[in-house]
Amino acid sequence: MIKPLRLGVNIDHVATIRNARGGLHPDPVRAAIVAAGAGADGITAHLREDRRHISDHDIKRLANEVALPLNLEMAATPEMLAIALNHTPNACCIVPEKRLEVTTEGGLDVVKFHDHLAPYIQELQDRGIRVSLFIDPDAGQVNTAAKLGADIIELHTGRYCDTAGKDRDFELEALKAAASMGDALGLEIHAGHGLSFETVKNVAAIPEVVELNIGHFLIGEAIYSGLETSIRRMRSLMEDGRRAARGIRTA
Image (tube, rainbow, N blue to C red; front, side):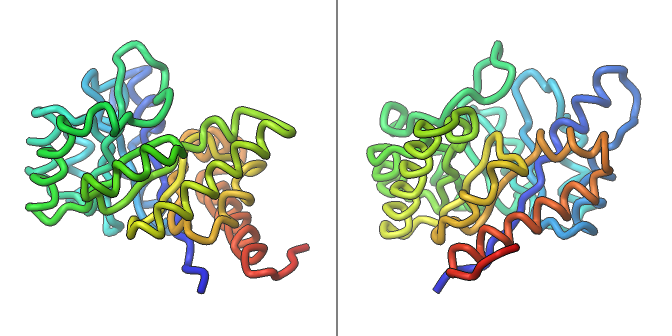
């Protein structure tokens, strides 16, 4: 049986635009409320070490003012752990983070950092916070995530989105294999990074994937058509992909 597919909307880059000029506008919390009204199932926000977009105050407001589950993206550092334990979001997605990167450049190497990650995962779970690991679609990474006791893996879709032709087909097969393996190991499967109207259907059609987290593209499209319209269109395309997974033709 193919499970329903959720959409998590990442509102980081609403804060990026706000911070470019300072002040309070546009408000990422207002964007989260609009996303909820447009059919989002959750809100994702990445609190970076350098606070380049989302701020500590944003996280507090998102936790207190938005009815949707909050997925806090964070690096595995003592500072971020303390913030997560203070706000107890629905889930924490542990991601790699480098100060000089423009955006997250790849998945977290859970094989290399197994011993570092283990206590963070345990402490978050002890507080009832679900733990997701953002990883590349690689068998070794998936297997280690399961051994670490993560609740969720979020498969990095960046390489799939950034390629074309046979290379994209190859990356899609890697995502399918990782999703199947993770599901068999008892992990909940999410996916995200770089997904657009063009690329989302094939990922939505992977039956084991139960949540897509999409942000930058939706915020960019909102400039042209509005945030609500861009989210509703993305949801429609996701459902097209899900119907394809069930063998139902779409127009």
